[in-house]
Amino acid sequence: MTSYPRFVDHYVHKVDSKNRVSIPAEMRIDLGNECYVTLGDEKNCLSVFTLLGWEEFNEFLETLPHKLRAKAKLHYSAYAKRITLDPNGRITLTDKFRRIIGTEAGQELVLYGSGDRIQIWNKDAFFAKLDEGDDIDWAEEFENASLRS
Image 1 (cartoon, rainbow, N blue to C red):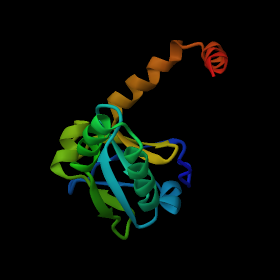
Image 2: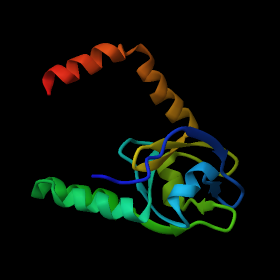
Image 3: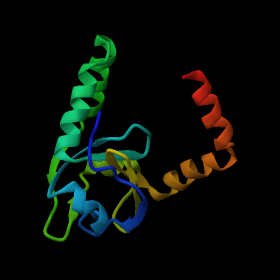
């Protein structure tokens, strides 16, 4: 897949009293005014795709073996919602999205640029996951990966 743009960095934002969260201005530039929000690849997170990114993701799903393709389409499409950002660059998190990431109004979330998508995480879950990488010897892992390819 060659989805552009490539999202990077992470930002902490609160869910407001109307269950809205601001998409950071740096990310909105590339996201546009509409996006698709669905389940993330990890528990406690959501994925936010550009319109083109969503199309490319679905094209990728079509390349999977039949049984996996059917499960993946059900997993991602059943929860997908096309959302228009409000004039202030916010999206509203539905009840089901808030349950998935374990948040409510007033709590902080992390919006993380993960390449072809933005991930929205429960703040505690994000930093716990991030800490898991602290004890990995990345140079060794990269070297092992390059030897396998």
